[in-house]
Length: 78
Image (cartoon, rainbow, N blue to C red; front, side):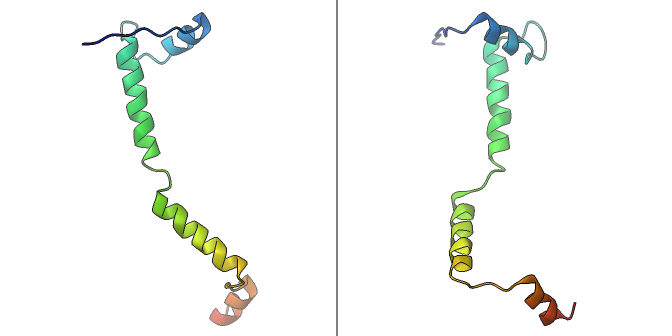
């Protein structure tokens, strides 16, 4: 396994220690665990397709292609 070192402040190292599941957990294991959690969280974010659909919807609204709440209430008898 290839190894490398990174320089971090004592303050950062102390903060990182708080993320360990147990005192002897290595920094590599701890960092990889956090990265895995973060990547799983990111999977719930908007996709490129979602963003394109939102932009298309905004364009339709800007062109006046929408109905007001009052119009919808009248349409559905609410």
